[in-house]
Every structure is written in structure tokens, then in C-alpha cells.
Length: 251
Image (cartoon, rainbow, N blue to C red; front, side, top):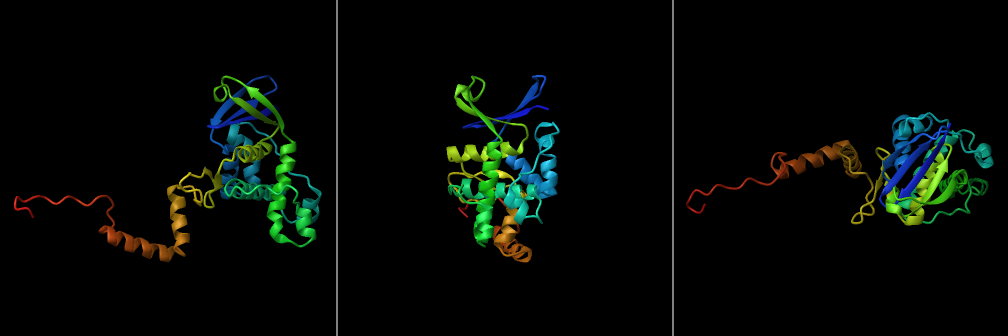
């Protein structure tokens, strides 16, 4: 059994595996690579299966993740799987703290929300607890290495498993004011463009179509909109209109 190390910089991330025999691998990836893999697979296969296969999909190594152990989760959320709670909390953190740039209310707890019957505070409380719990599992250290982000001062996040590193991605984004969002259709974590900071989906063709169906109020309404649009474009053919030929008479 080895370690996972995450180095995050202005241009992306480097995920490193370090085995007991001092061998390992490095993977250059985008910001929120681990979170994106987890949320995409959770969307497709469910959170429990996504967590179980996370390290194998990300690095090729098999690692057993341990669920969060918080008293209020065990007492009040007995009907929910802790991995499912954590995956939902991670998505909330990215969509609220990162996309909307709302500072996390780390004082909030799920116990406070449930004991005082304030369900509107529960998502924030669960995210805050998961964030603090996982970040306490991290070992962090500064690093200056010519092979990492051109020798810039970098923080390395080290963990025995990958779930804490997903929350390390949130930590880094909060500190550096990065703006990302989780696509509601595929689960991909995508960067918000400066000229469209409120973009709600990742832009993939399938997700764009699903967005348009929702935007127009359902499949039938979308089909009618598409029919009208194609009619206006001339039978559904896209592109510039063909140039008229000059017959020599100026017509």
C-alpha cells in the first residue's frame, strides 16, 4: 500500500502515486480531475460503486476508501449511505462555494440543522463537515521543484486514499478563487468561462441537448422549437446561404 500525492498549480494538477518500494507514477490532469471522475461515475453507476472504483479508474491501483465517521450522520441519517452523503456534499460544495463564490459556513453542522429542524441548512452543514473531516486526513507540505509548475511554490496534498484529495481540490480552488461547476447532466466538473460565469452545463453535445429540452419545458416542446428553427434556416440545412450567380445583367 502506498500514498497518493496531489500537486495543484495555476495550469492544472499532477496526481502522483507513491508505493512502498519507492516506485510510482505521475498523471498530469485538469483541476478537479478526481472530483470529476467521481461525480461522473456516480451519475452513471451510483455513488457507492463510483467510490469503490475511484482509485482504480484514476490511477490503476486498488484502494479501499473508508466512509466518514461523524456522530450526527450515524444518529440522524441512518437510512443513507455515508458515501452517497459525501458525494452529494462534494457536488454542493463545488456548485455553491466554487461556482457561486460563496464562502463556506464551516461553523455550520448537520446536527444544528436537524436538531433545530432547519432543513435548508442541512446541505451546507453536511458539506462543511465532510470538507473538514477529509482535510484533516491530509498531510500538506510546501514544495519547490523545477519539474512542478516551473519551479513555483506549490502545496502538496498527501493521502492514503483518494477521497481526501477530492476535497483537497475544493480547498485549492477556494484559496485561489477558481470557478468551476458540476454539470447536472453528466457530472463533469467544468471550468466556468469568464464571459459566461453562470453557465449551467458543460457544453458537450448530449448535455446541450438535455439542457435545451429542459429549457423548453420538455421533449415535445423542444421538438417543436427545433422544427421551427430548422424551417427558418431553410429546411434544416445549416451554414451560410449560397451566393447568387451573376447572370451578367446585374440580377
